[in-house]
Length: 406
Image (cartoon, rainbow, N blue to C red; front, side):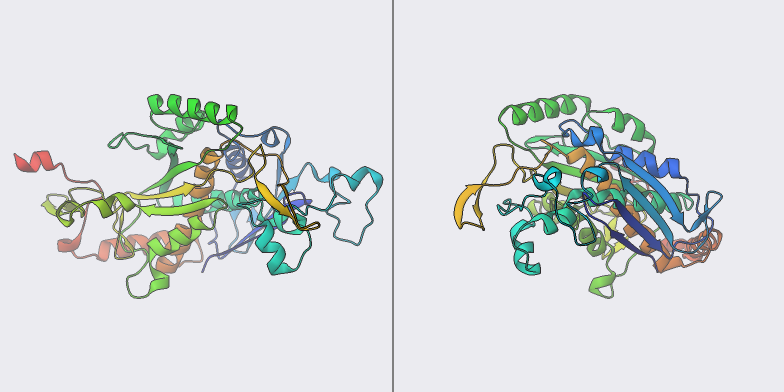
């Protein structure tokens, strides 16, 4: 069983990420994880924090000579801004000096759309600092680091991932546009919005510019695609074993994500049943689906076709002109506290979503195939695929319906 845990606060000394249950023999290099941490900072519309906040990665355990040991993998992501916050975020009882008093002032004006107010109620705090420090999307750096490890494991089994931006505000990639593959990651990362459609990317940039000019923020939709998945991950037999349910939970747990779709998702609800599902056809390579509307999951299980899952990110709640709130210290209406903020963080959300999908699929693979070493897991996977009856075997590629008609 694969388990992950993160710890740490936004302005604390470090973030900690632990992965337990990873088999031995998985290639893990600090530079590969660091590269993903840099990808998390990508995207047009990011704030100044991305420029000066460095992620100092240290692999603290579970890896020797570039390979996992089978013991828990422990990662540390140091915060280069920590020297400015040592008094405000001290673990020991501490009195603030004059130098830190401004930075450490009580945050009594909770920000709408954040965890501030409900967290203060739940955990019995009279200010928001103890809440926002952990609720901050800074925590996603730890998830991205773990996702890099999970993706390396999946890669050893021929499973590869890619994420891209589908929409920014009202601007959306046209229906039927080509989908990226894992070989397109570098091109995607070079695009301002990590969009695979050049004309749409230019319109997205204009939308971000207009939003910034208006002193506002904008959200959007990202999509993660997974190639090389075997059929049968997840299960139909109980609610908490369904792969789509696990993916939805993982993606909804990302800060600011408000909706998840698998395949064509909500668009499918607007179709009649005769055109909503993926028909099956006999081909010389096995059973093939005529379309990919289900997005690679049927009945809570992977089908062996490309998995497509989307996550919708709301506009960032820290709006530059400050939304109205209540100062809980005075009981009066006031402007919300304004922390540093991005205009748009959707491209980064794609990188985080990619990481969460990788972790979820790594867990599903190990639940299905087990293995104390990656060689054992690969052997179990190959044996499973070989044991599928010839009459039931499928091909990952959709059949060309035009060819069938002729």
